[in-house]
Image (tube, rainbow over all chains, first blue to last red; front, side, top):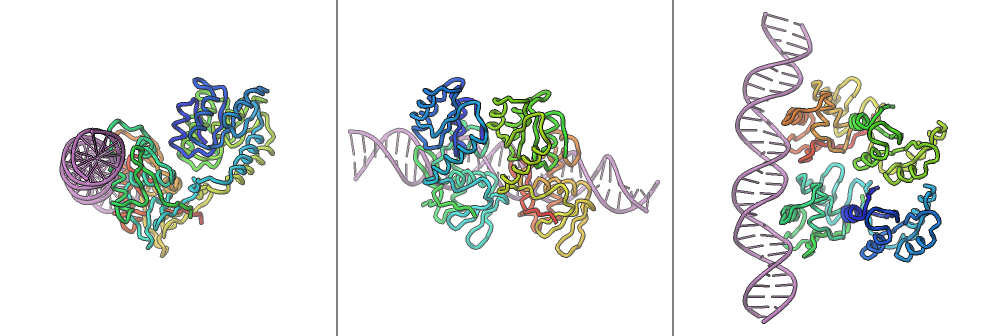
Length: 209
Length: 209
DNA sequence: CGCAGAATGCTTCAAATTGTTACAAAAACC
DNA sequence: GGTTTTTGTAACAATTTGAAGCATTCTGCG
């Protein structure tokens, strides 16, 4: 669970983490909840629960019209919140792609098995391929955000925990080194594809093991 | 059970002990419970129960938003506290990594058995490998915080009970000596891995015996 | 098509970080 | 007191990483 205090932080969190659900208070400093809700909806189908003040019927209606999936009146019963969250996920059972869960220790993709606990990458013959700390972090980030393009900024932020300076090409070099290790043909990458103008994207199917 | 009286002590306890569950009073000297809760959540998935004053609904909501798993209103019934603790552990049944319990005397990892009481390390043939005091402390710290990276500062603090002076490399040498004793191939460590820029991480599966 | 400009790939190299050896100080032991 | 063990310091070796810079690929346009 990530808690942020304004729209800017929210966008950053949505970008850097795999957020499954958004709970949005209407009363916020800076941009209000409605604006954020509409904004998120433009780019994402992530479930949104809006928190409204007591009995503001118009607020609820507006929120739902702007794309919220549910609303809750403050003060609310946590059990009710949990119930609504479960309900939303039941409802959205269909098209989710979040295969990689935080809890799963090993994941498989292509002919590789990546052990997230022991930081080991093994090929089909169970032979360990050594990854440096940076290579492992980068691969973990890509695998975790499987099938969605990540910008260099995002990757630097995830791997190094700081935002990148302009003209920073370090990620490109790490990608290059990683490809050399995990791609059959580094010239024709099948796992880590370049999304020109955006960044990189992990393309293989990732399944927990 | 460990009881501490402020945030600083809490962080120290969380770092130096294997805490399974945190009960956090909102009313605290210094940093308040919310700040601590959010802070803990940034680095840990440890279950948190917050203690709130009577009927402060907003407190409850805020606590849950900041990552608490449950709340309890003061004054509370001890039975209820127990029930909620059990519920949380049931709920979290899935992805817990805290295999090493405080109570277990011996642990196994790789081909080794470490007796935490008698401070003896034995190999698969039951032969004792002698560890110095420092080596044992370091190994115990790593095993206890199994699968999470520990900074040099943390390790020095745990092993020597004082914070390190800058440019202190003593931990690196101790790690090197420990690896020479417990790793099959000290050049390719499987048990104690380096996390560049962070510290060291114990990677093997640890199970109580 | 061919070209210019931009984005990306990748080699080389130096800086930063970590690993390890040798030796001395400190502590423990007898 | 003398000896052994343990631990830290200094120095050097090995590894990892990012910057510089050139090569290559892609895109839009004449």
